[in-house]
Length: 235
Image (cartoon, rainbow, N blue to C red; front, side, top):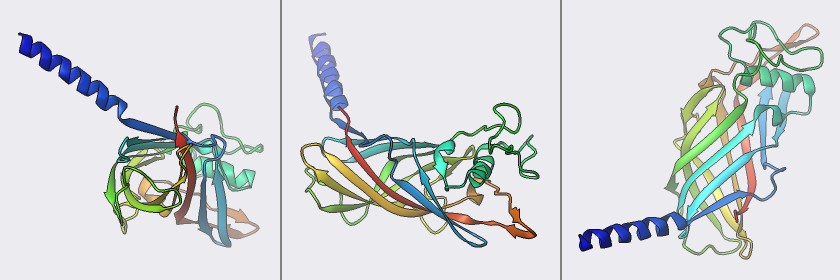
């Protein structure tokens, strides 16, 4: 009985110790997501920015990357044109099953979507999560050097338009390469950068073409995403 008690106490202490051996990182500036994107269309390239992102990255005390969770509201994704942005929310947010979209646009004259009903937003967020990190050029050491760049490859899942797809949603890639750099030893601020592509078709996203005079303007299937985010240790 005494031995059982000792083992139980040891297990509880070890479990508590393990629970403390993690570090959670959040965005340095909650107003700046650090994510931009480019998508080709018939006349050139649309540039876009995102804001309002929520992010949490968890590392062990020895800097093994354990998991990450990111979410961006689709109404915080902007291309600098209100009509185009509303059309983008149609494509990303509406459940097409009972909606008039994509047969017809459902944005009103104020570039807004209905707040309820079949033409309203059913999928308000884009999400990415991961629990697996592949070694690239090097594993993260227990102590990061300020200014040194570390390459890792993240394997995870995207959820867009209600569809969850593994990895980069790109048949040519089995992971997303990112670079990690410690900016400040005192604050533990780190910078995460990377470039990758997302296929809209992989998530059953249909972008309805629009007309300028008699010219039909379409959008490419592939969106190029540029990541440049900064994180600090959550206190």
